[in-house]
Structures are given as structure tokens and as C-alpha cells.
Length: 391
Image 1 (cartoon, rainbow, N blue to C red):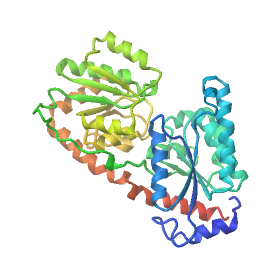
Image 2: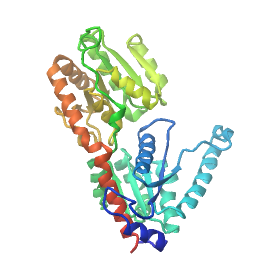
Image 3: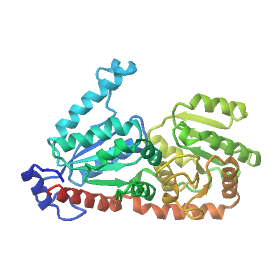
Image 4: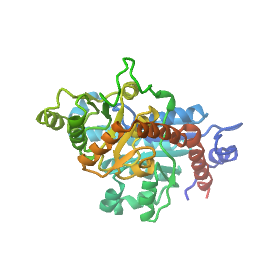
């Protein structure tokens, strides 16, 4: 599709020995990984950082081009409007420099403004510098975003060598627009999580005093108000139940007022945003995870709960039914239906056998999200992009 710096890139192709080894006995593959990094801690930022480290462990040279780099100077971040310029111009310069050095761009892309400001410029700069591009699209709002902005999105997609997505849900969305997308799942680091014995040290029955957690940002698309309402219904039958809401966002004040109106302030705790170590500890203390999102793709929070042996009750939004199977690895309910969510929560509490089954099947389902599994898919895509880039 595009030209190559022939010596460097052709050598890289010749020395790729298969999907599990990208740089054996020859030049090390050099990847430009474009995406956000923590903080803040979120799904795509965590995946970008984790992927960079795992690729480096495989002997791949990785240059991360951070889309949310700190403002320089720091005071620029306080000036609305101007701060976008202070972030965008250095970002474009880093892209231009990196595109002249790396052999391949791997772009972590999302919907909305992030696509236009970060993903699209990376694609076009790569084209100008004859560098192949893989777009790793992860936006749960893809269908709506495509409907509104397709004439702006399509020209950029036409200049990529491959599109990869983490779920069958997004694969189907791209298919509706005539684009083939390969599935490369999100990666879960199982070493960060462990399963807690189901009886606390003091012998308390978890079904009598369950600790329920929500681990989503406090944004409208995650509909945390429905989760809180469902908890209120559960608490009428299980008075000792308590809820921890871990996340930050623009709906924090509204949700806190809502909890007060419901008289639940003694049973619900807002932790704010927490880091990766703290989230693992939170799951260790949890008996159930609930997720009320309205729009979603492949939430890593659900995978983290499964890896911790925590039963999940979630809406069936977007890609979630591709991630978990109802009554096998999680319980799925309709969106914006607190009664259905509460009934599913009570069903779990009243059936320890069901909870145990969900735990064991959930843990068994995680193998396809480990690095050993995911890297085979990803390295195959890299290999194909390198080969196709010669033509």
C-alpha cells in the first residue's frame, strides 16, 4: 500500500520466524505505540502501558507516543481552549519524529474527539512518512460515532494496513461499514489478582452481609444511578449489604446527592479514582461486582472481577454479551432496569451454588485474554502489516 524504508523493513520481515517471535537472530522490530498512559487509570490507558511492557519482554523495541502527556509548561493545562494547543502541537511533533524511525504504528483509538485529535493525525502522519498503520479501535460508542461522522472517519481508515478490535461487537460494527476487523482481545494480567476464600476469617456468611462493588467511572454512559437504585432494592431484603463505588467523573456530586436522598449514605462509600494495586485489593474484599453501563465494548473491569473470583451482574450493553455468557460466566440484565438488576443480585445471594458456578466458569474463560494467547493474534497482525507494507 505505501512505500517502506526498504532495507530496515524488509530485513525485519525476513527475520520474523512466526507469530510468537518478532525479532529472532536479526533486527529488533521497532513499534510506535500511540495511546494514553495512566494517570488517570482507565481501561485504554492501562492496556497501553501493559502492552508496551509485554512487547518489550518479547524483545520488541517500543516507543510510546503518549496522547495525554503532561502539559508543558504545567500552567498551560489550566487555560481552557489554549491547553488543547499546548498538548496537540508537541504530540504532532512526536508523531512525526517517531514515524520516521519506527517500522510500524500501533494506534490505540477511541470514538469521538479522541479519534479526530489523536488517531486520525497519527494515521495521516504515518502515511506521509511511509509507515504502516494498525488501528486498534476500542470505542464502545463506535456505532453512534460512525453514524454521525463517517465521512470524516472513512478517509483515515482507508489509509490503514489493518484494523483490530477487542470484541466481536466491534467486529460487527466495522463489518456493517464494509471493513474487516480482526479480533485481538484485551489482556488481563492474572498475576495481579487472586481469588479470596468465600468465607471471611470471622466466619461471616457473605450472603448475609455482602460487599458489592462498582468499578466504573462516574459518567452518564455507565449509569451508576441504576446500580445504586438496584442496591437500594437489594438492601431491603439484605439489610447488612454495603456498596463501594470506585471511580471518578462528572456525575460524582449528583450521585452523592442521590445516595443521600435514598438514605443510603451509611451503606455506600465513594472511593474516588484508585490505582491498579488498590483495585486488586478492592476485588479481594468484594462478594459481587455490578455494572450498569448503557454503552460498552469489552470492559476490563469485568475481566478483573472474574479473575478475582467475584460474580458479576451486568447489563447486556454493547459488547458485553460477547465477553460473558448469561447464566454461565455472569448474569446479564437489560439496561436501565434496576428491578431486573436487583433480582439478579438477589438470585446470586440466594443461590451459593450459582455463585460458585459463575466463579469457576468465569475463571476458566480467562485463558483467551492472557498474553500467551493474545500475542499469537497480535504478532500475526504485525507480520501481515509488515509484509503488506512492501507492496
